[in-house]
Image 1 (cartoon, helix red, strand yellow):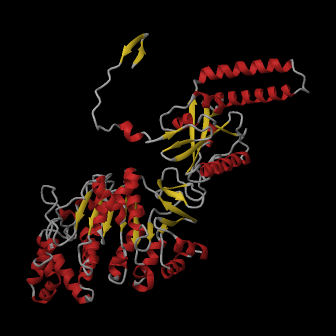
Image 2 (cartoon, one colour; image 1 turned 45 degrees about the vertical axis):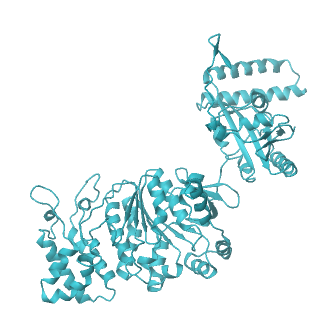
Image 3 (cartoon, one colour; image 1 turned 120 degrees about the vertical axis):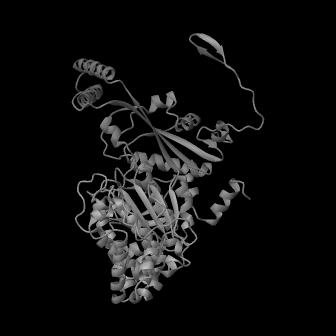
Length: 622
């Protein structure tokens, strides 16, 4: 093998072949190719046929996304574009010369001849191009469009090719078959930034920048936000669905709800959203009270932090800790300090915590606990004055723990019985919760796994984790953040209480003011609306502008219909949804979408047994 370098032939060195070694080309190249037909090329058993839009076959005027009908024509149809930008000064000079020449020729042509109309059209086009490039500072491009049609057999392929040519004709475009050029078209459709010269010559059409932008083939009148994250495809027209939950011009808040029965794809959707938001730099928190291990792979893949909140875990959150950064209304800019008492706010949270430990706690018991908590903080030098949180050197003081409170309760006769409420958290089997905080949240992707806690302790664990995360979220009003609350019924359902449910509902109401969003997810629709006749479930939904409703059983679908004012047709769509399909409600827009992920992300997020078995075989662990 040789190549010409600076006019001299240079012999290439051919490396010695390694027997059995697989190269990148081996992986990328098809295993078989048959290009013996005029009408198609067969690659790995799939029939490919190609059309190109003739250079003279475009419409003179086009609206935005004028190629979207081709994109929405079906999964077996693809479009490849090649845009070649031309030098501004050089092409402008050529257009001027050509226009002058045509005007001179026009003077010699009788106005009754066909040539007169052609020259008139060419002159008008020349002035249009010059005006766009001079006045609007647009660039000049040559555009080539190649359409790929695939099928499993030649007969089906021919039918689809005919349908596409008919579609192009209905759009006032001329599509030509690439006879004997299908191999060249196949190579041109690869992401190599090259196109066969003969195909380009036949398909080339000049366009300016605004026409180039109008050629963007994706359009969705329902959901398409310019700075959003990709969700999937519109189920009915295959247009892409892109959502920007933080677009305050469109959505009054960024909160969301994900409802779906077991196996409908709720966890897959939630993690897809979390990963894509993380890619945009958004801070992500996930609280997982059930099957928390399903969130681990994605967390580790993006370098996140995975915390286990369980009696056997070394990770500990001190529920009595007052966090330093909560002193400022905005820790990052520190525009002012809080004039309200931080300790008073902490006392309210602790009362919720105690009510979750003992559901039938009385007001008298809460009053006694309130006094004991205050005395416990006083012993650590902390009072209702915020300045008392610092020592003489300006350092944050050491915080009491549940063990400290337990000792205080035992010190007085009237509070000794109350010590039993927190005894197991202070010195008993759950003493792992009674220590000092040993975890931090300095990571952009954090999962708090609470699934190892027993059912009666899950609301308690969810509250501890949410309190910790909420303090972190309030550090900044600038940084975007999203808190995903899986199986939120644990805090707003029948197993919880009004104090905890009010706390959650308050977060959904005010998190917007901290530049954040809260996303609730549940598969237990009945429990989601069980507390106080559905007051809190309805409150969360009413404070969420984004809603994903995956497949539901009939009775659950009709319940959701009542709370969300869905039509009968939309309700039936929810019942008919397959795994990975959802009715997306964003403001007044409602569209059924199919959740999509790349093969890599899918392999990380999938929980299907068959997929996991395939992955295990690939990893060689069988």
